[in-house]
Length: 527
Image (cartoon, rainbow, N blue to C red; front, top):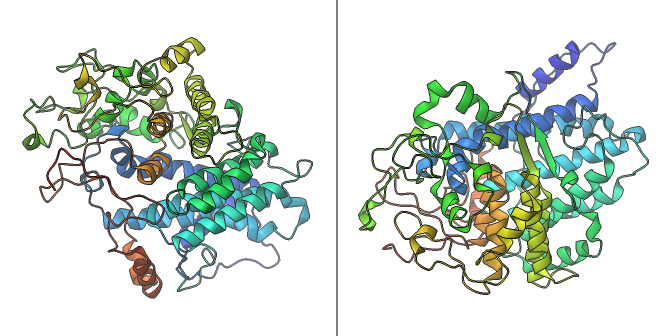
């Protein structure tokens, strides 16, 4: 084990997607070859820690309107150069390199066939996140340590990932080798579940590009629908992973909000106002799971979410600002489920699979076009995932605005469905089926920041308040991407500049990616 740890330490310290490898001195008579189980566990844990940890809290929380807090540059819709460098390097080095090494070391050995395939599937998952954050990036030529690694266009990466995932899912031999249960922290070595994960991820990516390339998205969705049992279809098949109970393995939120509460008291994350007005007026039983009633302040005992602008925007409304002079402790804390040391992080869920099917069916891109059934199945799956009863789900599904095709009943309480400024609303019109599906899709994956951010950018249908607490004193809508890291301009300037030219705009937060739709301007604000 000691030699394995040394190998990983060297690998993580030196490997990058664009920096040249340094020589690793090894005794040729005693070569080090790390077992794939150790490498897979390393990659899974690093991916969980990055996308469920710092990157989630610092970048994605306020971009996705589930939680609020962590004041700083990203939260005010600008960015930190050092952070972008770290996020880039952590993706390529800590998350991708371990599984890349599995492929390099074991691809030619047939006794490791399935384990290599699973490593490739996980690589595809990580790249599906990377491309959604930056756009065009190095992929096929990355991870070998050669200088000047070529970038690939965003749309070409999606095409490659969609093709790869199909081939990989079909190549798994259900009678062949697999990872040990304690190494595969997601599926415990279950090959069928990995098959379904690959196909469901493929469906997620097809729907992600549905606005940019509807023809390709439709073709892939219809193909997947011909074997609908081949995707995630039960709670047991949800791709999720738990942190641990020791200080070196516990969850990011537990460490920041519970264990180090005193040090972080001024910036602990709390419920976002947007999540509250999308749940509370609809009597959504998930709200007590996602958050806790305020323990102090003017809304004690109630679910009270923080505005992501920390009370800004008062100049655009005549309403009294309920956020003025409040502290973090005056808001609803995040739900206890998410604050446990061994909390769960979800990569891809049964509920999401249902809503993807519902969306495809609504477009006529699914073999069975009954979108209503998949929509209700998704709500049931979400409620069940959070330990809520079938009766609670049934009551929720009968609520006006939630019941398929119905209009929100806001009689006498229209303001309850709005943000405090009255410029955004969760109100649903009759027969607005697409908004119903997307709203439930978003509600089903709190804490999955990278996934929710992609959903928001590709649909632009939910109403969220702009960021008023910007550094320049103006307001700004949800960012479209993260800029390329400064390290790439230093080590790979020709390729990164080429990638910027593909963007169709500057290398900034608000240049739209290929897969996304433009921001929808709020009609209640001047432009």
